[in-house]
Image 1 (cartoon, one colour):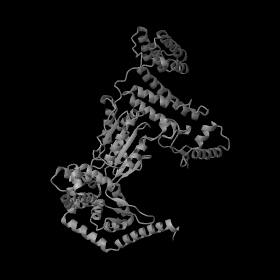
Image 2 (cartoon, rainbow, N blue to C red; image 1 turned 180 degrees about the vertical axis):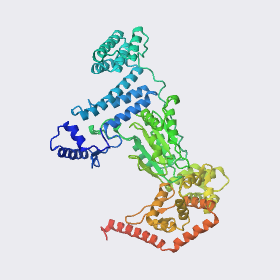
Image 3 (cartoon, helix red, strand yellow; image 1 turned 30 degrees about the horizontal axis):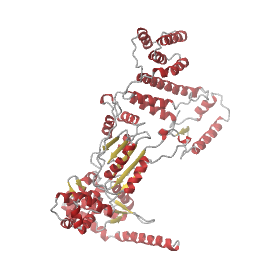
Length: 620
């Protein structure tokens, strides 16, 4: 009742012993709290939920760790859905009411506890009245008579229950009984309170007498059939490979769930199915996500939603606008939509609560952007792509999308460029693929450029790509432009990060450690490592596999490095470029590169030790 707020020992004593505590009351409270802590940990709590405070105790509960929070959330969603889908509102109200397993805290007679319990009983009755009101609207009068008769007997002074019973009886062609119910309610009000029924009940009585009351005799048809959007873009025609990633992602989205045990609770407590594809710019995350989405779409017959969140752009998409678009696509009329993102999100979750819908969120910026767009029910599924891994989303399985294996790169290139040309110049094909770094975006750009120029030999094009200063330009064709796609990410970089990225791009080596970055930027290795990890998070650097005890190392994809050099030539003045070159030269003269070589030698030694251990057993 007092979650996340301190509760004094005195208040607990009053709640338990009603003003007549024994002398050992404080000690008994302490023993009970100890027992509760032990019980909660035994029930699965990873940390102690009860904290000792100078003023007493506090129980820390977040989200939906307590049934009252679930009830309040369901009631909010039911109210949001009522103006759009009364049947859905009824379903949510009934789900909320099922949480009550009887009178709240009926076992404890303390006035302090019962006063709080009475508040929850009032909330339950109000929700029940609202639920029945919408049930009458959708036309289930006859089914409600028995329940309402009991409720009126239990609560004879609640005029709303009486009015609902009269309406249900009248709708079930029991007009005389409806008028008799009014007379019974009137006598109870006069006898107990000396009051006549209120104007609403009197008006309802008059309409039944005159036959003016209109109620649906059968379940009313929905205002419009539930919309089943099909928003997935077409799959990429030249997509190849990624077989393992596709199989694992499909399994995550449609694989068999284990049979729940009684301890698992209702089906609605099962987690949302989800997966995410992350990786560098141009690695084909979106194409891979679409392949997976189209393969599982038949398992989500209630629709597929798609949104480009533009997370890698200067101005990412506003989740409020995406959410509003989703609601309209799901059949929500624009005129009945509530105001505010929290209300939209609640309505969105309510609409998808029991629908098998697939949601593809492409190019997400961060978890804050996508949180309002996640369905709440266990029947839906979500696929997310982005350059940054959303590791703060529990249970969302990440798949890192990297450059293509050599065989798949060849298959993609052969699929784009006319077969007679590729078969006639196999050596040139190998050179082109090598110079694209097997990056899918660059491969598609190279293939598109060659397809548009049938007179250009593959050997000639490979020769042109040999020039590093021209390669970025030649591997851009229309929207297939790696530098343009990187621009937004680079523009949003803080100044120090951008300077470090530019400096690292002109190093004579492609692999480097945080010591090299520290010397280049004039910061400590710890700060440099944080900066490097930030560049990795943005997809602007890669990490190199690191053996135990070896210093972490980082690497540029060659095309990304060339894009960085291309940008710095355009962005920096001649003086700034000269200063940058001086700093790089100074780093090379300092004993940083020997340290880097020592790291590399240490890694080699560890690999040799591991190989030796596999043959002869452990070695020093």
